[in-house]
Length: 253
Ligand SMILES: [Zn+2]
Image (cartoon, rainbow, N blue to C red):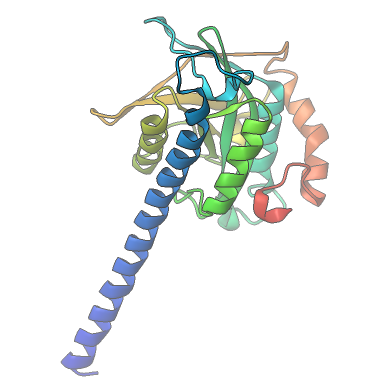
């Protein structure tokens, strides 16, 4: 191979890389734009100060607590959905080298200054670390489903199968986009292999965007469930997950 070929190869490689990067960026931008459009479409009818004609849509009114710290409560349903979604793509029937992370949306509601994480919406799975919600159409569908259930998107979740609970640099970038859309947005990270009877296997994070630092947000369970019961509950859910999952991503329907 002569030098000219090498040059052409390199050019092609760089072009492909750039194309990939630009595509990714566009997708991200598009997702934010769509979210903002959906949000602004909703706001219009209630933007006048006079009495709204229709009952006020709870999902668009996010009460900002006055300087008080937001408390977070998590519903059992959310945990079971997230754990089984995570295990579906990282379980003992799959060679560990093929395990991938999963990603989804968190749907919640404000009750005073308590954020209730009522539900989780599985969105996708992919190669470790690079988990982003890829399809904006599914994102819009999830957005509407969540709204119809009287909830709003209060953050996102993803899994770290066997590698612990923390926020990577890329996780912080993703979280930044959610926090720009709603500043109290949270990131839930789950390692289903930490669900061992002593831990719920997940943590909830927020980020200081200026300092690019993450911190944990303390949470409580909404229902009377504890760390000890969780493995048994998951064991009940998992055989179904191994066959055909009860909670499907939008593409899997
Ligand atoms: Zn991560």
